Length: 94
Image 1 (cartoon, rainbow, N blue to C red):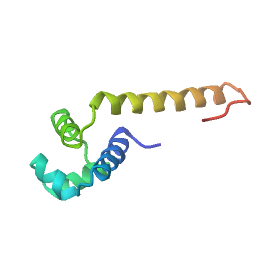
Image 2: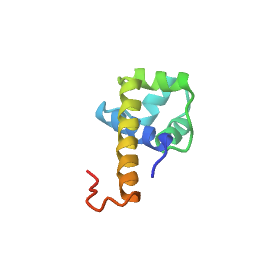
Image 3: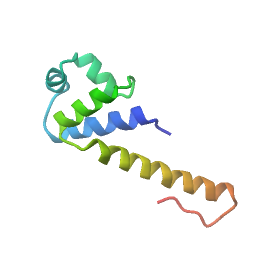
Image 4: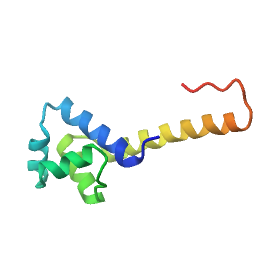
């Protein structure tokens, strides 16, 4: 299971590609190195809250949307596994 940094990295990479930007271009807009930005996309580095909001501004997404989607997916998996642990043999993950 991926952690929140990995999920965030996948999300920001997708948003960057949708906007036709390179890592270098995004990094320049953020005032950080391309290597640092690349590590955020790979989930190897955890961005601080200020940087999360700056990334969201550059890539034009709402931080609440990302975390809402992330938490909804986590809860869905949690419920699936809870039902499986409790012996519900008809459990199907969507």
